[in-house]
Image 1 (tube, rainbow, N blue to C red):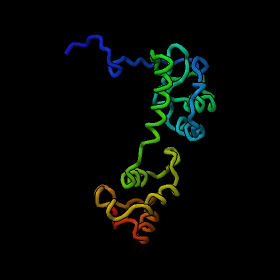
Image 2: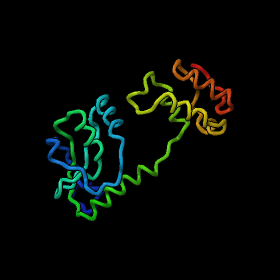
Image 3: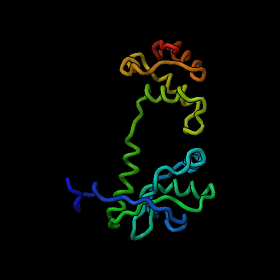
Image 4: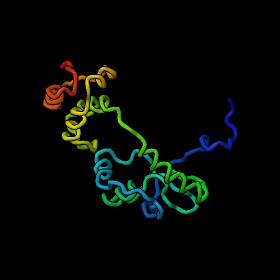
Amino acid sequence: MSRGVSDSPVDRPLDVERVPIDEVRAHPRNPRLGDVELIATSLRAHGQYVPIVVQRSTGFILRGNHTHKALRSIGATDVAIVRVDVSDAQAVEILLMDNRASDRGLYDDPVLAALLGELDDLTPTGWTADDLDDILLRLTPSSLDDNPVVSCWGAFTQVQCSRAQASGGASSGSNP
């Protein structure tokens, strides 16, 4: 298959650039209120691993407004971005869709509990031990039956798993 020019937005090339942080600006119409400190925690632990999406004609951020704020808060001087050529109307659509898609996402609690349970330190994830407790207490035996990969293991989750099992919220798992 030849790589010709396509009119499909899916086929647009994306070129990541590093630019001075002041070269791009938060979108003035972004309705989202993000957790800048939580994002800053992630940036300190992992760095910026997703570029910010910027409207080429305006320099406004369409995706990553709060990442930009968090980068500023930790003293970053440059930022990884991808510029997109879109109209002002398309820019607003992208801004709103990105926020809405995030809102509509859900977690698979048994899988999330298993992932969190594998970690010794939850700090770089944005989750807490109390969050994990709450997830485990919500689990029912049938939700665990649907996800056979979930079991209770490890020193970190032993108390939480025991608590969930005692309340009838989780089936007994094995400790490998």
